[in-house]
Length: 88
Image 1 (cartoon, rainbow, N blue to C red):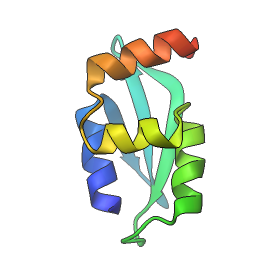
Image 2 (spheres, rainbow, N blue to C red; image 1 turned 180 degrees about the vertical axis):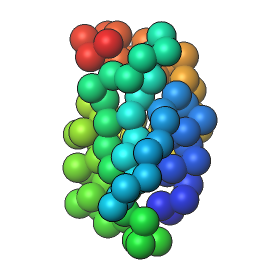
Image 3 (cartoon, helix red, strand yellow; image 1 turned 90 degrees about the vertical axis):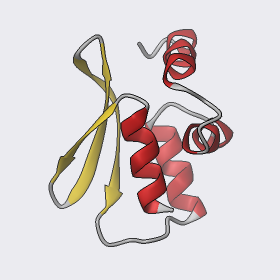
Image 4 (tube, helix red, strand yellow; image 1 turned 180 degrees about the horizontal axis):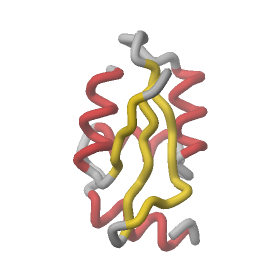
């Protein structure tokens, strides 16, 4: 699951930086935004509780995060969603 989330976010406009954890930041118009989350290097599975925290950090509902990872929510739709929520 961890690897799937990372790959999905990278395909949807996030960049990654390695440190103690993998820091993912949404890039919009070539610039970093305040939309970010972290994924542990060591965890193979992410608990429901942590998925909820990640969704909150990404300004998404849990269902929207699931849709993003399952690729039913594309990059353009994500940008539109962020614009509607006023986070971009």
